[in-house]
Length: 56
Image (cartoon, rainbow, N blue to C red):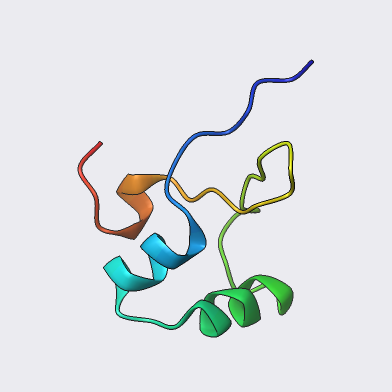
């Protein structure tokens, strides 16, 4: 079984970046992000804290 990605949820990432959840989904859907967003086993997006204004 592959490891479960850790990180912040899409809601936490949006809040840290000053965007809406819908905006982040739009950016991903239209290929505007630099890399694919990892997903948890249940399919939820998990953003790396450093890529959205965090320190860990």
